[in-house]
Length: 114
Image (cartoon, rainbow, N blue to C red; front, side):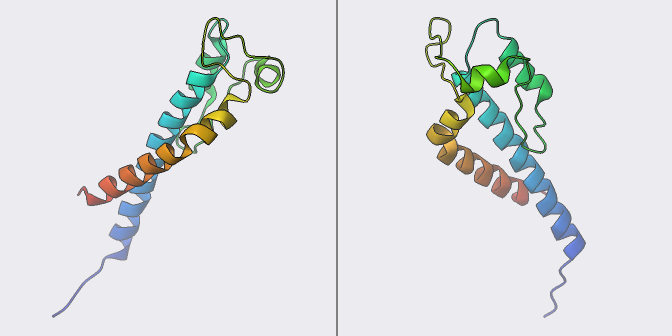
């Protein structure tokens, strides 16, 4: 019995699966973070869709006042009842297990496809 393992194809399949898992993880994490983001005009949340690099897992809120809103002051919950300062940190504390399961599931499912 002979077994041939084409490592180039295996490597390509794993690389693609990892990229798909990263994209799914980034999308879910950004959505969860934005659910907790302070909300006034919606520009900070909108900036995250434009400034983030989902393929690298880099989530960014880049309005001029985003850093101040993230770290300082109280969250006004009149427009978003779930608003919190340090919203990404809070989302990670609440949802990191869910994010990990999403990434694992997407990676596994991607490796099964031809």
